[in-house]
Image (cartoon, rainbow, N blue to C red; front, top):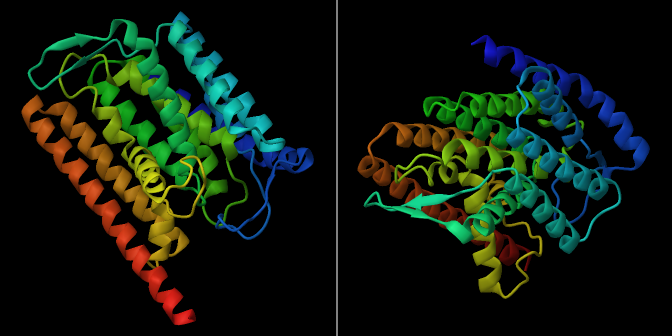
Length: 346
């Protein structure tokens, strides 16, 4: 247990101590998030908080963990993402440049041995990906990196969601016997929870793209090396369930924008948290509801890892249907409220 407690405590304390320092530097460097018509906050806010999360994670890893080739690759990839986020939070970066650098960071960790090398089907047959291993791994890493970034719309939302996901990855990895990966996931969670007191409403700082991209990147990489190594049919789906909120929200946004004929990467105010706010929930209530859903998804992932494949598939199908129905219902309710408000003004 001390193998976990000490590094997590270091991560928490470093992030907690570093956050007020980062707030001062963010203001000095002009890394401020100004309000606009698609954002919820109403005044400028420092947005470099991800630097404190990364500081907690990096310090704890270097101080307590045995450094191997794969871990070096992970740390290099994370550093590239954090540097990209810092530049983006201070000066802004175009979507094309951001995607290119994210892909570069993903290729770095892949070159150090982080790959989804095979998948299984319900009949327990193993399909080795061979030439597809690298592109599919890069697609997963870049996709999750951006999915976490997209849900970063309310105080404490992306940070808390990522912290819950990290704890769940740690628990499942430990159950699967991957202690080193479990500790890394718990360290990541510790650094997030050290930052969260400053980010939960009323926030004193946002984690910005530095934080949301780093957390998405780190979670996606830990999921690859800690949750997809089993030959059981369900192993490939466990990280998808754990990261269900950002994945479903992103996929739903893509479908929604495609059907509307709007650019897929064009920001809007129709994400899950916006829908809950439109239903009348307060800022805090919305965040806590999404936390609760994340905990339920995490519990489902843990159950799936304990069960035989047929039972696990039933849980997976149930979770998928529930999420799709819930997202569709929220969109319908939010649309009805907006239409009523429009008719009332008219």
